Length: 167
Image 1 (cartoon, one colour):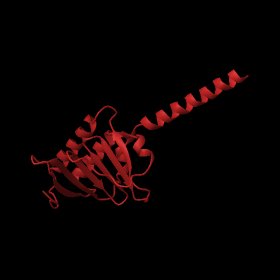
Image 2 (cartoon, rainbow, N blue to C red; image 1 turned 180 degrees about the horizontal axis):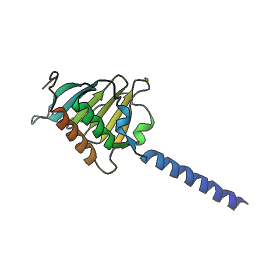
Image 3 (cartoon, helix red, strand yellow; image 1 turned 90 degrees about the horizontal axis):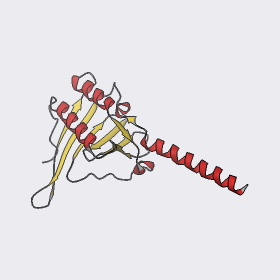
Image 4 (tube, rainbow, N blue to C red; image 1 turned 90 degrees about the vertical axis):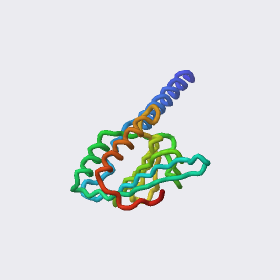
């Protein structure tokens, strides 16, 4: 009887572990966070370390209206990419600091703010006030995130920047 209970307990733990793994790696579409009738603010921040070891960054901001070709291209692109949870997404972030040697793209609307780095990190902050959650793009390395950042930058090159923030 004790042996049977032990096997049942181990089986239940294995099923729970399997469900947790599926929950963590289940892909979700990035396009679900962009509303089709709200303007999109985009910022591209390229950070690096100078030869003297000091951090430096350049930034450009863009306003993309929902009826523009760029908006359609960005939403179509985001619909082709997925993200998944990681252990850092289980709790809300207090503060998200980006890597100093990376490209960061911030896409924000009234409902949501998406912060994407070419290092593979993705922070999604919905306007519900629950705080940002950190996710991952791609399962093996940061190749998908670099590709997505490059494609978004290529689309935004067709827009004229609002104003360079710092350089």
